[in-house]
Structures are given as structure tokens and as C-alpha cells.
Length: 116
Image (cartoon, rainbow, N blue to C red):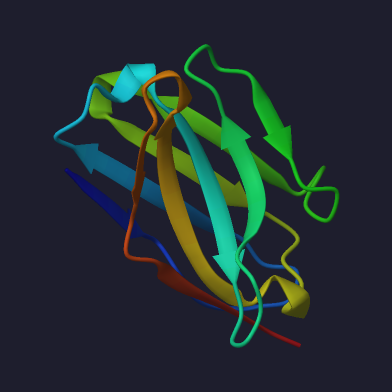
């Protein structure tokens, strides 16, 4: 099983980035996929999730700025991040969760840095 997160980088405040999470080795369409972020010394926080049926949910801090989507044909989930703020700076991780069977996997993380 592999979750490959990519798309991070350095961007100025107000800019945009699109993160991708490509999965292999799992029945991708059955999993809920989430994006989390973590800064040094702090806990990993949920940013956005998309269920197997396409229902989405967002942290209040990113509502209206971030959009999560999935392409089951490509086994990939995307996180479109617009109007980025310095406080969005973090390592972003993707997570695949099949709660019914207690299966959960993490990707390796991608760094997002937003300069002011």
C-alpha cells in the first residue's frame, strides 16, 4: 500500500497550490480520504475529507478557500488550496480510511510554505 502526496511548495500569501494524493495497493473507491496538516511541535489536524460517496467536510479555517475532490479512475485525491495564508504553512499528509474494516494508511507528507 502506498499513498504518494505531492504538489507542495513555496507560495506567497494569496496564492494557490494543488496537492495530489495518489494511492496504490488499495480498493481506492471504498476509502474515505483525508488531508491533514502538522506544524513542528503540534498535533496533526484535519483539513478536509472526502468520503467514498463524495461527501466532503472541511475545517472551519479552510472553508471557502480549499476544495477536496477525488478521481477514482486515477486513484487520486486532490486538494485545491486558494487564497493561501501564512498560517496554512505546514506539512500536509493524506490519509486513507476504511472505517468499517479498521483499515487506515498514511502518506509521507508534502511541505507547504506560505510567505507573507
